[in-house]
Image (cartoon, rainbow, N blue to C red; front, top):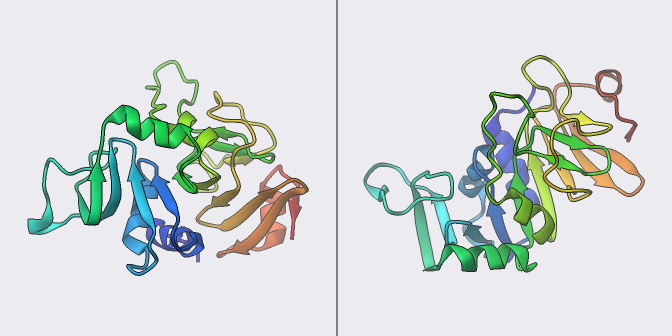
Length: 209
C-alpha cells in the first residue's frame, strides 16, 4: 500500500537527528511536527518568527495569534521565543538550520528543486521563503506525491518548472518510495506498494538500488 501524508510525515520525523534545528515548509511538511519525539530536543523554526514551535493546536489550545508560516494554529514548547521576520530570514540564510522539509512540484535527478510556480499563465506564484531555505539549510528534504494528478512523474531528469534552487535536495519522501539524491545518482531507499521494477518503468530517471 502507498503511504498517506501522515505516514510520510512520520518517516521524515524518524530521520531527523535529535537536537536538530528544523524548518517545516507550508502544506504537508507541517505534519512532521506532530510526529517528532518529545524527548528528541528538535527545535522547530517557523519563518514568521518563532523558535521551538510545538505540534498543531486543537480545541481550546488554539490561539489565533500563534500560527506557523502557513497560518495553521500551533502550540509553543517550553523555551520558545519570538523575533522579527528579518531575523528569521537571517537564520535561514545564514546556515543556522540543520534541516528544512519542503513540498515540491518537481525534483530533478541531481537535486534541483522547483516548488514555487508551475509556469502556467493563471498560476499564482508562491515562493515564500523556499529559496532562502533551499540555499541556507544544511540538508533539504522534500515531501511530495511521486506522481501528479495527470500521472506525470515529479521526480524527473530535468525540471521543466521555474527553479527554486540548484542541486540542493538531499532526500525525497513520497507516497510510493523514499529516494536519496547522491553524487552517484538517485538511490531507492524504500518502496511502498510498488516494486523497484515498476518504478524504473514509470520514472525517466536512472535508479540505483
